[in-house]
Length: 373
Image (cartoon, rainbow, N blue to C red):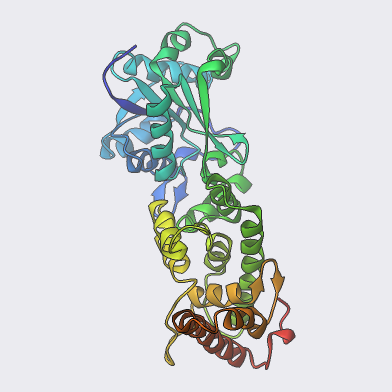
């Protein structure tokens, strides 16, 4: 086994893109192309040696890839399929790297945290293959160690790479990731639309990614259910407010509702949860999580996503809708002899009432009973 501590990234982009009907590597994605985004994904995760295998329309890719300063490997046998491109790329890595991420060029949106989590698992276990998994489905890129290199290089395309890696199943591991991007590739125009939509909102975890975050951190099912109801209430409220002229990001409200209690049960759980979310790369969401228990709402405060999540959380007790009086009344009675705690409860209640009054005023209604929450 190679003892150099080098992890490489191999992107295969040599195919015909026949099912897509357009050359996938050069499709626009945001302000870049699909292939540029794939390179960025690996580099943002800490992989400095990125190599790209080209074949079909290689001459169109060379100028772009040279500007990206990646090693370009031409596969003259690309017509034989993806396995031939893997072999062509691996021939340049064998003896140099101890493992490599294998990323199809049409699966470009891998989160930085995912790459780091897979590397951490590899360092911990020394597994032959580390597979990324999202909601029980394996995706890309697998991290393939040098123990598999000889079998791949001496193999053939009859069974493909999957059959070869299956030989190492007993010595492989799966890593549960909160990253829907590991499953998003481009085979059709509809796939491309979904990928583009995902890219546009990549700073906010999707609904399923939020559920994966909760599952990964072993959040109690009751807490998870509470978050789902808070998300539903927040979504309804934000949608109605947008209908009267506000410009709230509904996806951010939903994500905030789902994961606001991520660190429930830990000391200072809002701040702790905010830090956890920030470490995952979701900075806008982290502030909402951190402020869901205590926030200032001055007279000139503009209703934003954090205020909606704060209020929605106070309108949900467990998994049922309640009034603010029902939510805060028990705490006021229970801690009536503890001035410090009462002050804290009153502060939160008054903030919730202030946000409530503003929301109802904007909607032109007198109570939440008139809203379809």
